[in-house]
Length: 151
Image (cartoon, rainbow, N blue to C red; front, side, top):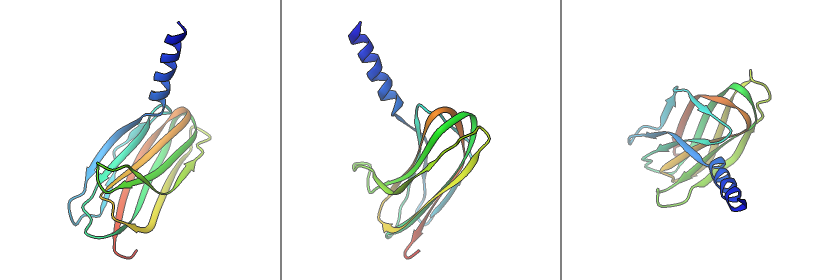
């Protein structure tokens, strides 16, 4: 019985830190901006991410914008961060710092912006959104822009 409880606890921990891909966007060569208005629901059990595949011709800076709107309960924190990599055969590298939003009431909403002025040559980006506490939050709008050359 003790082993069963340990296995169940381990399975719960794995599920609790898992990520769910909510969307993949492939930007054609020459396109450097995308705006997504589809609503997605963020829970406290599974982080959500948006993967953006690009075809940059040179090093770029990036800006991501995400609008969050509380639905039910309270997330005690929502962490938003941007990751990048050159190829799907390499590990993700965090770009910039994590932005934390403390959604204290069910009626709060916010817009988070992350801008990276250090130019990088990544082809794939991941906007990762992780909620903690109890409740659900609507990911209301997401935008991604990369800047060719000097910002």
